[in-house]
Amino acid sequence: MMFPDLCLAAEGLTLFPKLEPFVINLVTFLVLIYPIKRWLLEPLSNVLAERELKTSGAAEQSSQLQQQAAALAADIDARLRDARAASQRARAAVLAEAEAQERQILDEARGEAARKISALRESIQQEVASAREGLRAQGSMLAQAAASRILGRSL
Image (cartoon, rainbow, N blue to C red; front, side, top):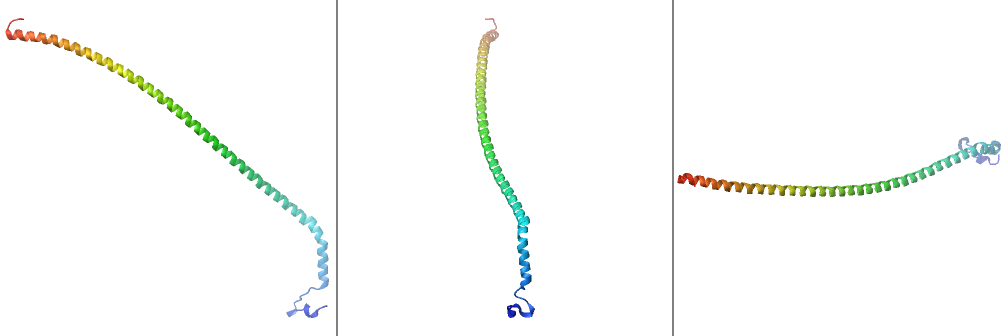
């Protein structure tokens, strides 16, 4: 041994490995490193890279779909606003037309009512005039009858 004092520590612990097993382990490592790299590590690395590509591709596709969904939602919102505005305009037009028809019907009804009231007033005035004439005639007849009874003779 090269350093017998350094190779042994307290209670028989060896600080430096023996050369022969170390060389065997080193040669075994160097012999196995290429096949392990070629048949185990490279395929595993390729599988992981493909998985990463698929994952990033799926994430990218997901973000594109989210952008498309947001664009469609904005388009739908715009269409809904346009449809609501159009329906409000149509509703206002229908209400305006209904109000115009209501005014026309009310005006016609007022005119008809005014004509009927006027006709009734004329009829009532004629009946009142007729009743007055009848009462005047009856009044003079009653006055003559009362005077004849009071005087006791016919007038």
